[in-house]
Image 1 (cartoon, rainbow over the protein chains, first blue to last red):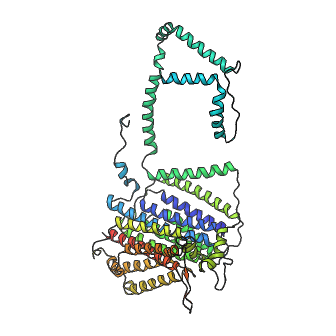
Image 2 (image 1 turned 45 degrees about the vertical axis):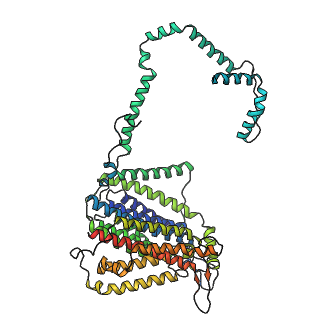
Image 3 (image 1 turned 120 degrees about the horizontal axis):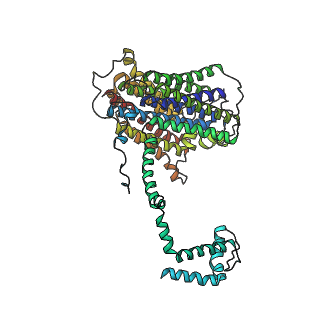
Length: 126
Length: 460
């Protein structure tokens, strides 16, 4: 199972990167979401896949018996929420860009470039 | 005058080197090296190559001074010296620096995001490949072991979703395929002993669909491809290589046995020290509460961003822009939302001992209002909430910070959680609950700030 999950996780990350390389802002955003999902899946492997018991201490017991790794789950839980927040923030930015320039192409988000190039004359900066 | 003084001092010291060696040189050298180093200074070292070189230099100097006039006359007759004079070279180098840097700037600062990212990914691949080759390591693969067919199929469906998303023609199908991967990941978590993660992932995927639909309603769904076929092939190649490197790295990592002292500690101490059965939640709200506090701050900042970027005021969405809602959703929406809200409180309450907690609870509560917004419109959902989403966020931050205060009064570090066991069959109460309610409110408010803002902005 570990091998399969490594394969799937790496594949999802690869697909996410492919979409991020697109010049369509919404596609990039979806690619980012995929990237986060794939990274979480791979991160899960760092805790090893083995026990199917959730890391919950059985009623009446004092300590955790055989169970999945709790630490990595706590890390991934925050990663899922942060990844979600990041995706939504990007969605907000894309929507604003669409309202501003009427385009969702990355080339058209060029307000910084439109401000002009640095001084052209040599020695002007001295 | 000062140079004269300096050279006089040098002369005096060199006549009696023993004194300066003892007073200054030996202590300085010892201070630099950290141990005593033998320093020996003398005027006469005998005939050495250095002395001979000095003699040569001095003689050449004397000759130049002696024949100053003839040398200059002769040199001036040679024309090509002017052509390679230092001033000329200096001018050239100055001009070429400007030209080269302008060309370089045009070449590397082209403003095309795709090429920047491509370069970053290519460099990562190259670095990984180089480090593997340099260390001469052969990646090991873990044994295949027992394969659970159902879960294996789910994982493959997830991969299929990702591939479909990257090949989708329209943005809507890309979003649905991305969601497929998300849900498959959630089921994977579920099947491998991580119900907390599964709950969170399920809720997040549902919310992403609602939130991104608002975005997709505004932008064109089908746009021409932004990359030529050749470029797409190049991108696919580099991403495949990257994925292959990632796969080998993680397969190799899992060969090493897993002996995490930290995980074992949390498993051992979770109930004894923090009164909680759900170790994941205990780590989040108690052992690593400071991290979680930081994370809620990040989410709160994102909510402020949503508030400032998106249209959050103004009346209801105009009637001609609101989509017709199916009758069944219109009838059941209110009840479903109520149930979801109730479920979110239950999830929050039992989180310390069972799967759940503030994060999932807040997401489910947001889902309830997403449903309301879908069924009755944003304005109606906002009115049902009664308060501004940012008020929820602020109250949440306040609670998380306050929950750490009682420990300070008891003379313990900030965010050390305290417990009260009332007995008489009443449940145990701890400051962790206050902390988790804070997290719940922050997540709830932040998602709603985005939800309402995006839906208003998109319908404008």
